[in-house]
Length: 596
Ligand code: AGP
Image 1 (cartoon, rainbow, N blue to C red):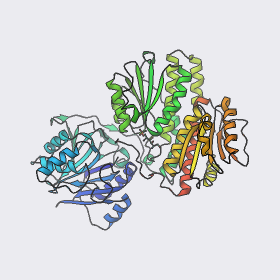
Image 2 (cartoon, protein in one colour):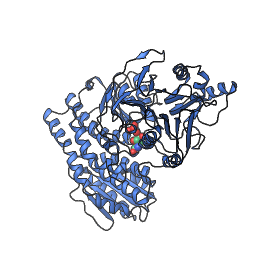
Image 3 (tube, helix red, strand yellow):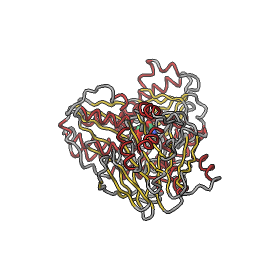
Image 4 (spheres, rainbow, N blue to C red):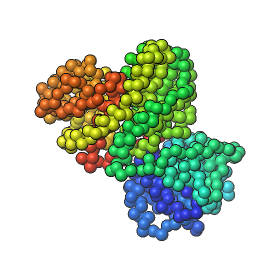
C-alpha cells in the first residue's frame, strides 16, 4: 500500500507535500518522490529509501512551484529502487502520476503501448497509468484520464498532472481511499486525512470512478461520462494533535495511552442501526490480522451470551476464496481499522454476492467497508498511525461486546437486567485499562530482560487463548522475535517439545474457573526449564523465581481480553523499543494492506 498527496495552491508545494508524506509514511516507506510543476516543466525528485532521504535531497535543491504531487511507496510490482519510485512520467514527460493500488491488467496495457513504440523506464504496474494517460492525451486531460480509468482493471488511487495544463490536478480512485481537501487558497488530494489535516478539515470522500478536477481556486467532480457531480462535503472532527505524536517517542505508545479515552468514547456511542439478529441462522466474523484476533475473542462472547448455534470466524483472505456457505440467513461481520483492507473488502463483496447481510466495524469514516456494507458500526479510536494496532483493536473488542449483549437481548437469551449488568461491566473497562497503564514501569523493566529470546510463546485457555493470538502477533510484528500462541491444553499434543531451558512463556489467565488448568500448564513448562510471565486476575496467582506476575483488575471473563491486551501491547512495545526496532514502521509491513 502507498500514500499519495497532491497540492494546488498559492504556496510553494514542496514543504507541504513533504510534510503530508510524513503523515502517510505508515502506509509504506521503501521509497518516496515528488513532482512539482515549476512554471517551466515538471521537476521530479524520487528515490529509494525513507522519506527523510528524499527530504535531505530536496534541501539541496531550489525546487519550488505551486502545483505538485507526492508519493511514499510500499512496493508491490518492481523492487524498491529509484526508477520504480513514484511519480511516474509518460515517455514524453508530459504526464506525471502517483498511484496507490495494483493495476491488474498492466501487462496487457504495457504490451499494447510497447507495440506502439512507447518505451517504459520501470518494472512497475503504475507506470502504465502515466504512459496510457499520455498516449490518450489529445489536449484535454480530463478526457485522457477518463479513457485511462476506463482501461484500467484492479485498484487505484491516482493523482495526475499534465505539462500542458499546469494549473490542473486530477484525481480518480477505485477500491482505494482518496480524499479531496478544500481550503481558502489551496486544494488537496490525499490517501488519508492526517496528510492534510493541518491545512483543512473540509474534505470530500471520492467514490469509485468519481473524478476530481482541482485547481488552486476550486474543485469540480465528474463521472466517467464526463457528467458533473455534486458531492457532500464532510468536516473532519479529529484535531491536528490527534494525528501527531504528542510528545511520545512513538505513535504506538501514544495510541496505547489513548485507550482509556477512546474506549470511553466508543462504549458511550450508542449503536443504532442494526439488523434483526433473529432473521439469521449463522454469523460469520471475518477480518485480517489483529482484527481477525478481535473476531476470535468475540466468538467466545457471542457464543456465551447469544447461544447462537453457528458462529464462524474466518480469515478474510481464506473466506474470499472458499466458496463459503453463506446466504440471506447469514450475518457476516467484517472488522477492520482502515476499512480498506483488500482481503476484507473482497470477503464483504463475496458475502454480498451470496445474499448475506454484511455489517462492518470500522474506524475510518467514509472507508470502502463503511460505504459498502449493509450496516456499519464505527469505532471511535481516532486516527491510528502506528502500523501495529492497539487502540483500534481495543475499540473493536468493545463494539463486539456491545453487539453481543444487544443481540443476546434481541434473541431473548438474556434479560434486560442481565444486559444492564453486562453493559455496566463493559463500562468499567476504560478505568481498568487506565489502572493497568500505571504498571507501565514494571512492564518496561520486565520487557528489557526479554530482548534476547529467539522465541516467545503465549498460552491461554478459552478466551485467554484468543487474546494470546493477539499478544503473539503484536510481539512478532514490531520486535521481529519469533512467537507462537497456543491453547494451553494443546501443549501436550506436540508444542511442549519446543520448551527448553530458559524458554519464555507468556501465560494469560483471566478465566478464574480455568486457572487451575493453566496453572498446571505453567508448571509443565517451568519443570522443563521455561520462565513464565503470567498476566492474570487470579487471586491465587503468586510470583516466584521462575514466574513473574502482572496482576489484572477483576472483570467478567468475557471482557477480560480488553485488560490483558493492554499488558501484551506494552510488553511487545518495550521489547521492541529495547531492541531499537522501528516501532511505528516495522519492516515489510504497512498500516493498511490495500492489496492482496
Ligand atoms: C495489526 O497490528 C496489524 N497492523 C495488522 O494485522 C492489521 O490488523 C490487519 O492488517 C488488518 O488491518 P485492518 O484492521 O485495517 O483491516
